[in-house]
Length: 110
Length: 86
Image 1: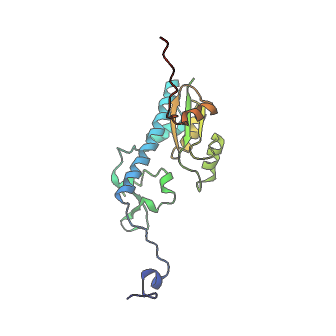
Image 2: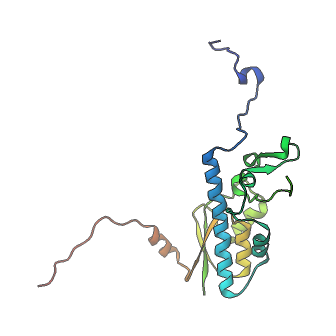
Image 3: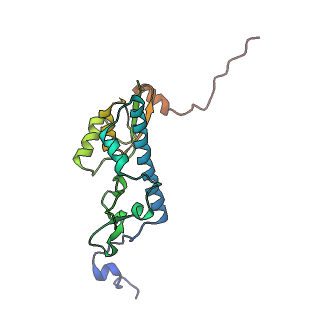
């Protein structure tokens, strides 16, 4: 039970990674903040270009395809589609570099 | 003539080479580096490639290196008072 050779999870099983299956409320809050920051950048660029009466394909495509933070459902904000997962969803923090990527839309119906 | 004021707030380390190349092309070497570019579709496209990493503002004139430095300088904390002429 006690001592140097007690059977802990990491000693008996070897490698033990403890990544929680969902985000904490603080991680979710920061995720929303990041989403809004990207929305702000796109809005600023769009407004500046509109003053000169020009448009760019990248901005137009973003506005057409990507929902803004307020339009997104919580499911899409904090989870991501994965075909190998039970119920086809896993936490967005399992996505590598997830804090510096724009992952907003998922397959329809999932 | 208006300018984009672009500041790198998130590092590009570990991101694809194309993304890091855009940062290099914009002259954003380290975090909190600020650069100014005129409002053109080309620059807008570059910003869209790195939109998760930068903060962007639209300003009327581009600041020089010295002006940016003066902007960051804190208040000195003292005032030199002069005698009022009577």
